[in-house]
Length: 311
Ligand SMILES: Nc1ncnc2c1ncn2[C@@H]1O[C@H](COP(=O)(O)OP(=O)(O)O)[C@@H](O)[C@H]1O
Ligand SMILES: [Mg+2]
Image (cartoon, rainbow, N blue to C red; front, side, top):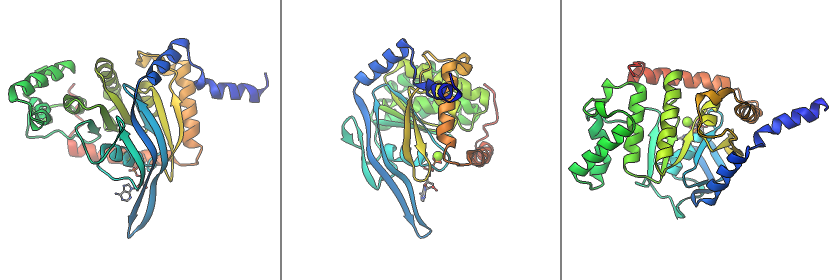
């Protein structure tokens, strides 16, 4: 086999799916489309100038799908998820959730972002109860449910603790169940583990997959950590920089259940290789961008006291 042919074959290796993986995708695609993004565009206009952050974004997410979105820094990932959350208006196009246009924030969408968004003055249990009571649940019922959620993530012993008494990973676990307690149809996550150290991050990925396996939730998860995307996703949406456009939607061929042991597997490596080709193909110096992000994380770490790995 000549070198070019063998390179082409190995480059396309991520398209090969074992029968059980293909069957899983078939089952996923047979489920209803929950989220539909159509010709979505976003342009920021200010005195400083005009920035096209997103241009003609199209994709669909099926119920119970785990979709990751990757792309270089500044390609519009956060803008996209803020539009899905209803925190930002699009300039053009449409977002449909369960067939209905998204207008403003809503109970049907839960959100977890990188910075810790727990109320520092409330206990862990009350943080989880908060949204439930706001939505009209009785205190007794809210407390019962909060306890169930905390036990699902193994934090029942910390129900009466305050956020500052928890490690970064524990805080994000609480933030996840707090979002899920309101029973959203979709969970929107923007680099939620970006500020955690590598070990905690790996554990959080396992926790999240465990939760996702147990409940009926669709997840849209943004990360610029390619390994994290492969570890978590059914499909990975790769965005192109400037302006953000969809470059490819990759079906991750790594079988489930996933574990850290799969990190060096052939399926994992060919997927990683394809993602690198796509992301570095545009000559973006994303290493520089990662350094920027690292310094942002470092300053966040100081602000939020997340270097305590007391888990
Ligand atoms: N509120 C805003 N006003 C003006 N420009 C913005 C605003 N938010 C984001 N942008 C610009 O939009 C582009 C995409 O940003 P963002 O969505 O944060 O990217 P990412 O999350 O992929 O790093 C960047 O060029 C950024 O500077
Ligand atoms: Mg961002």
